[in-house]
Length: 125
Image (cartoon, rainbow, N blue to C red; front, side, top):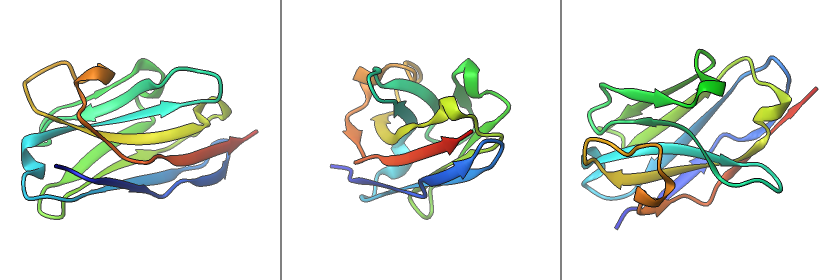
């Protein structure tokens, strides 16, 4: 079992930055790939980015490439999402998720076994 708790959400003006953090319980954190997803009101949950278990590879959806960065610290059981140059369309509830790292499929919601409760990010124009 893995429990995930996100933090760091809030209200920011367009062009600003936020850093989300996800803290994981359990001793097997380093065996999981970690993903970030978001869900805006009235829309489906969508992939934002992911990082492999070792942290050597990251993946992003096109709309956040060059603005968002995922990192992890396996010693601290944390994964962060640094969000820069935020836009109003980034407004959503952001979720971190964990999946045993099988070498692929990181963009797919259904491969993730564990989810956090979500944290609200609101970007004002």
